Image (tube, rainbow, N blue to C red):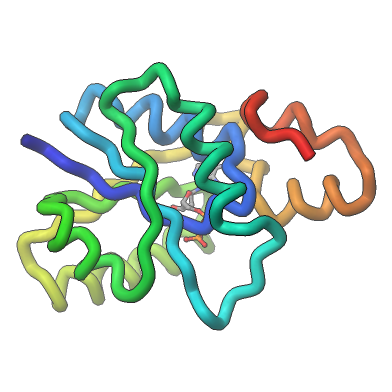
Amino acid sequence: MKIAVFPGSFDPITLGHVDIVQRALPLFDQIIIAVGSNATKKYMFEKEQRINWIAETFKKEEKVVVDSYQGLTIEYCERKNAQFILRGLRNPSDFEFEKAIAQTNRKLKKDLETIFLLTASGLSSISSSIVRDVMRNNGDYTQFVPSAVRI
Ligand code: ADP
């Protein structure tokens, strides 16, 4: 069974995240969307809220599981018997950042492969941080997020 963990903050989930998951579905038997909790990060939305939005978005997709975790992503993958980490790439700065993380993870656990999917054109400018800004300022955020996400 090919299991991938898609780790992230999902604060909130956006159409960019949804696109990465949908395109990864044919590649894996199961995708665990794992909401990470980083003690040093401040989130706009509670973990339960972020999880609920993801679960609602993928409720009809049997291959998708939603979970949360703390600590190292590689240890979480080990617990879940996942052989792959799934990440999305939008631009050169994502690439540099992701490269360093993936290479470090691979040193820590050499049989864990990180699989990158390029963002779909048109979705590369969507980020959770910009969506949060639009939300805070009462702009129309609905075009950037799945319909489950409403505040
Ligand atoms: P993190 O805090 O781990 O960066 P995010 O929720 O911001 O968590 O992102 C999780 C993953 O989704 C990352 O691999 C990120 O590059 C990817 N991602 C975010 N937005 C998009 C997008 N618009 N298109 C493709 N991938 C994206």
